[in-house]
Length: 322
Image (cartoon, rainbow, N blue to C red; front, side, top):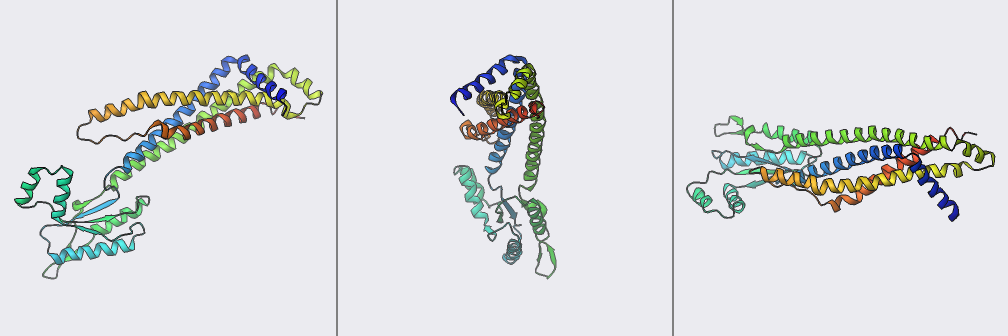
């Protein structure tokens, strides 16, 4: 493409934007709203993932043992758990036994060697031994539930030879319910984000199409004359495509700036306020905007270019028919 042709197309694109300024503003606003919603959903879902992964022992099921169990009964439960681990595709290692004394040491580390913990343990350690089963991940939620149910059905043999329930349901500590709830919220947000993106993108296409159609209608005689003079479809189409691309790029830049402001001065303040007002809860982990800048920038630009190019192409279809 010659430089003169390139600058002609750019100039015509900007003229088209200012020629229909009201519709151009409407196009930009709808596109910006679309991008901001998508970007905000992306940041929220990523924040949920960050905080979920930061939960200690999230991928662990802990089986607490009764203090009345004999060494033989504890070993029976251990063997049953080993069998469960061998048959589960999401558990790589055997269960780890943690004694009551080890739980005491961990508790001391948690509370920075608080003296009162030593006093409690010396007077008779109330903590119980346990087995810990670590999952590779929680991606197969159904398999995790099956493992828990199998643990709940473990039986042991007492001294008289009678079989009794080896593990009480309340002695199985896990995050399965939390995981299910968080995944449900995350999937709902994900689906809602996709639907909102689709709806707003369709609205954006129609608004940009109408904006470009006004320009096409205003230049219909010029387009007809260009066709009669042998102008190619690409030559006729290019200024209007440039108009759509400019709208898309400007919308992406504006949306990126607004998203930065919302993240830096609104979302961050909300998280800080929620954390400071919540007693006894851990801080909410929020990433830096620099971590989101590249995917947001690429995503916004892709949405803007897609909307601009597609809408301009559809708008000109009628006028480019032979």
